[in-house]
Amino acid sequence: MMTERAIIAVVDDDESVREALPDLIGMFGHGAEAFSSAEEFLASRLIDQTKCLVLDIAMPGMSGIELQRELTQQGRQIPIVFITAHGDEQFCRRLRQSGAIECLLKPFTDTALLDAINAVMR
Image (cartoon, rainbow, N blue to C red; front, side):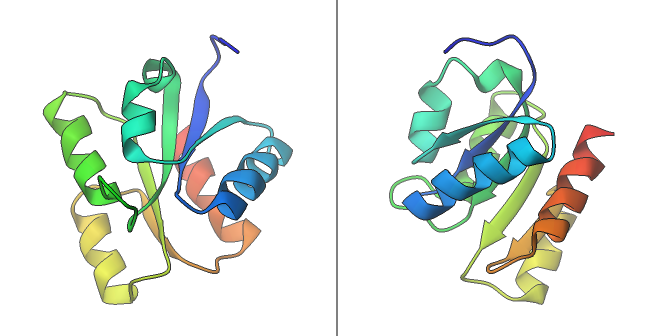
C-alpha cells in the first residue's frame, strides 16, 4: 500500500512488537508500518515518508545502532526512538547524547511511547 502521508516506522525482529506497536501508534492518530529488520526498512519505498523510527537495538543482521549510522551516512535525518530489552539507563543516556530522541527500556508504557512520538511530531 503506497501512501503519501508521514509514517512512523517500527523496526523490530519480535513479531509481537511488530503487531502491537503499529496498532497502538494508530490509536495515537498516526500512520505506522512495521519492518522485521533494518535491512527490510532500508529497502522499503517508505523510507522517504518516515517521520519517526521506533527502532529495536538488538536484531539479527544490522542492529538498530548500525541502522542509525547508515541513515546518517546517507544524509537522512529521521528522528529515532530506540526500544530495547538489553540496556540500562546509562546506555539509554548515551544513545540520547548520540542523537536519539528517546530510549525506552522494554517493557515500556503506552504513555512513554506516546510522549516520545509526540516530541518528534511537534
